[in-house]
Length: 175
Length: 38
Image (cartoon, rainbow over all chains, first blue to last red; front, side, top):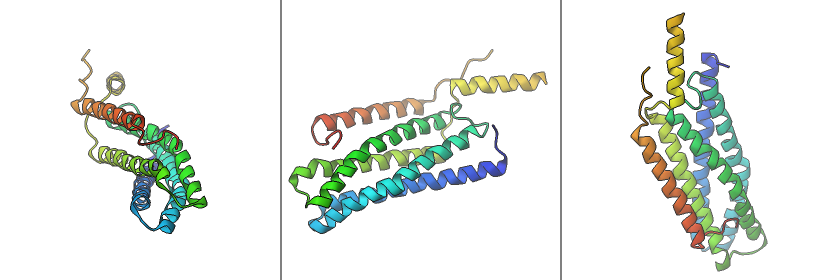
């Protein structure tokens, strides 16, 4: 199904908004995880981890899903397609595992939030706190790469894209 | 019939970066710095 130019612009705008929103939400999550890791104020640390769980469930997860969905609509609804250009394929390779890792990571996020709700965090929780910072930093790096790829759109047709292009050229010559 | 274009070099660079990141990720986990599921 091919979209009209108006629909394409709307889908692309939605994709950019959700994707950049996802990046921003992860940046906030990273800032809070660093604050929770370095702060000496026990109340602040506990509040940090409680807020981080809410941000993850109510901001990061919805923006992630919306970004994936609008990305699929934008590519499949246009002649650009999903598997024809390396830069789009690589964005897919970045986004799908990132989404899976996010859902796997929701468990430790919930765990540290529950610990923060019950008691003050101690040195026994250090590995969880490190995990929060490291995972958020890695997620931010991955999303920055995806954003850069979207802006630069490095050249390169996949073998499938090349074959489709040849078929379209052949079809144009016969008509 | 013409040949398909060669795979761009940046795709290989990206593949190597992904492999390095995955290895780094598991190395950190096995080093015990981060629990796999909290």
